Image (tube, rainbow, N blue to C red; front, side):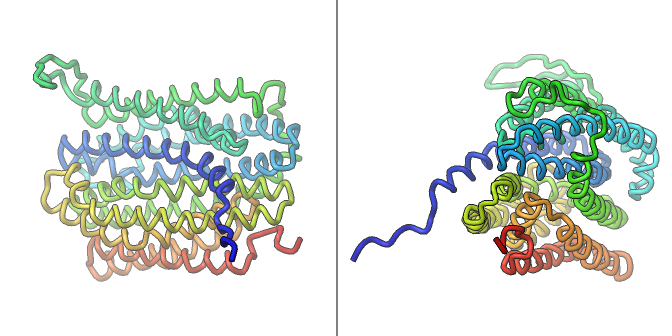
Length: 460
């Protein structure tokens, strides 16, 4: 009897890994900086942590809206690259520059203009509203370079270049960490490996953390713009940035449902955090820290999602049904395995990780409890993430919009409102509603994947 042929296509695995690992490393670096930022600010006290964390979900709202616009270009460029249509891909990059300018300037005006209102809307305690407002204003001054980093990074990933955004992200994070040390703390004596020396510090506290991030974002935006300009495949040189509806129309057709989805879900995060903020300072601090810790364990999921969108888009452009089926099956298997490992690690590491960011026993206990709860749902959320990646790659973004809005507002927000505002329950109940949201998404996406309704090549 001959040997059974392996069902694992190692060639596809190698391609998936080549695209995914730079994105995972980039996100790991971003998360490491979040950890460092939270730990540094946390050393200033619970109020400082709450001031920074109180506007975090607004950051998600803005960043995710911009990322959603970039998904339209990802689907268009990935499909064009799969079809070997370099002309269309290059024209799309020119339009990406136009969108970056318009969106970056728009969000600069909006965020700076509303900086004094955001902490009030987020129900931040009156004693920390002023510092939260100044933190928000400084953080969003470089909105144009931040927009460039998001959109141009997605353009490069759509062309199969995930290493360049990784390098830019690493550079930004290193700058951020160095400036944190210099701007947050006052001048002090530092003991390092037995050596004692005076370390300069500006002593700006929370505002120093905002300034460090703003400077780093500015450098990152300039860096990725320069790299894109010189890129051999997707440089915007020579391309018109005048509106071209032959390019913008299909990109916006994909981007708008995704933007509405992300805007709706991110606004849900804002409402979710606002209700948690109303519970009290301890809940706000524990929620902020738990979110920071948890973000590291989503890295495999989001890294694979980007690779999934690119490769399914390529297969769609090439009209290669066999490749599409092989890729998606492999992605599902890898994603589930990665998220099982990630969830297990989060469950056992929850307490020591939360302990890094707070000296409050109440905050540590509460943060650990909710993290252990959510760790059990990580594999389920991974199924939703990867299937959504398939849909983004082939330009079917309406279905994720419907699923996410139903899950966010019909389960998480309604459930949290009932639990915290009507029944007087706390953070544990709110996170239970979040887990129920993740379970629903897993079920909806898995049914869609099995039916094949997302796949435009199914009938070929």
